[in-house]
Image (tube, rainbow, N blue to C red):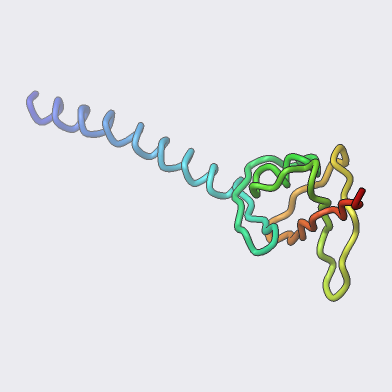
Length: 102
């Protein structure tokens, strides 16, 4: 009877641990890494607005424009309210807007 109690107790303790580890693994798999000016950002969302990406990287969306780096060129400009489908490894450039003198 004591052995049955130990086996039952052990099984009931191990099952929640497996569930927690599985949940943690799922969370890790859902996390995507993107880069803004070489700043690494981890996100779980599938889509983000341009201004949200800038804010996550520490840039003020009113002072910076966001560009999707497509290799070689400056890239495609992403508007502040434009939705971006997030994929692991995406690279963006945050470029300060020109401020006219006067």
